[in-house]
Image 1: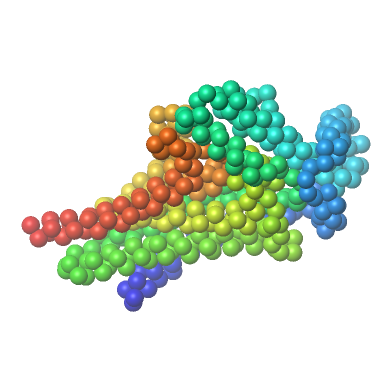
Image 2: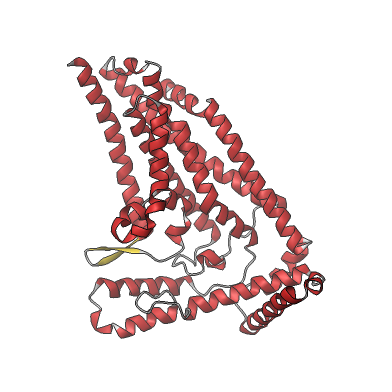
Length: 395
């Protein structure tokens, strides 16, 4: 236990961690403040705006939706032709029309799709039903079962409604882009010297001096790496929630449906509450960050300096983003890239399943299985790396 705590302190209280955490905190708090300023600028008195929203929350009213779409068309034309006249419009009224029209269009897209919808790869309720009717004679194929399951999940999720998710929209957008990169880079920078730093300072000889000592030290280092990744994920999400919601009085909207957010309005998990999605995304981020930390630790065990470790880890993070054009060939690299998984949104926003013996297995399930197996393999490889080093020294 003492050795584990010693290794954990080296990760948590070193200069890189402190500077990285400070930069991370600054970025998150700045994002939260900017979101609060922009939102209050758009709607004026936020409390009054929320009260107006609550009057219309719930299932979409078709008449209100059509009126909102017509008003948005009028407001857009007014803004383009007469900016001064547009400027005197009540900002709360304008924002309310925009968000209700957006929710109405989300419900239409969920139910009926659009002209761009591929009939052989549908996403709307109507498109999925039409596909099953056209291919009724092929009900024993994976493609049919896959669409059938997609339709069942979409129907269970329900039609998107109208709810106040303005702050959640911004927070989840941040977590799905900049937040994922911040987490990944901080892990790469902090964990990279966990073994390579010992080689640089010639402390590696102590690890290799005895079998018992080597095993204990490697175990302590890996456990401290996992613990650091856990603390980082929990702390990061807690800071994000505080930064984005405290300016508005506290955490709200946890019981709202996930598909009330535009990015998730087609999600087969759209019936989840935002609390359920938050817990699922934190859990996924934890698992991915732990695996990334183990990847970095294993790479560190193979190098004599932290710098190559950082370079290799960053290449693993950014590489899949440049291979999206080759996804049809290199789909495992793209689908299971660390940044993509940390974003959360690509995993839960759309239906995706893999063919396992003719049966569809959902993307999130496969992600958990693949990442868990990879973590186990990396742990074994790190110990094997030190066994080989020990053997070579004794040869």
